[in-house]
Amino acid sequence: MKLLEMFHDWEEIEEYSARTVIFSERDSADTMYIVISGDVELTLLNEPLGMESEGGMIGEMAMLVPTGTRSATATTLTKVKLARLNRDQFRACVGENTEFALHVMTILANRLIVANSFIARQLA
Image (cartoon, rainbow, N blue to C red; front, side, top):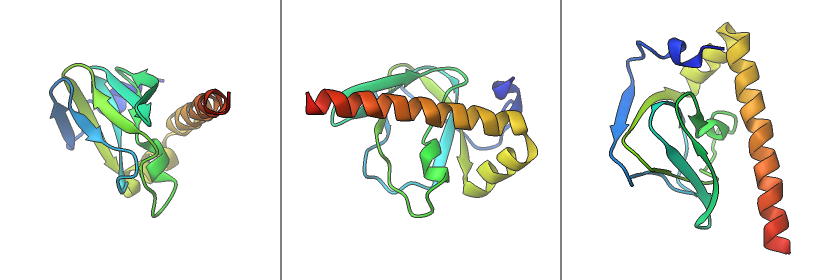
């Protein structure tokens, strides 16, 4: 899927400099982001969970829980350009593009694998 092509002319673009917190764990959540360029690190309790770069998504779990809070902190590692989606925009993308929906499901499955590993490390 050519995810970045979907957001080439997206109106809601945000840019952040390196070492900037985009959102923190336990923040209220009503948007998600597609990484257009740059690198974003995801952490939980100050421990690294992973990194998203060009074509990656952050904050996608907020789109599925109506009154959700952030489950991780997202911090830029480099200068970053992001496309911002609210819930209505997310639902439209999922409804109109099966590949986008499957991509989101794949990312959520990978997040679950990472969460399982994090829990196992905490219990060890």
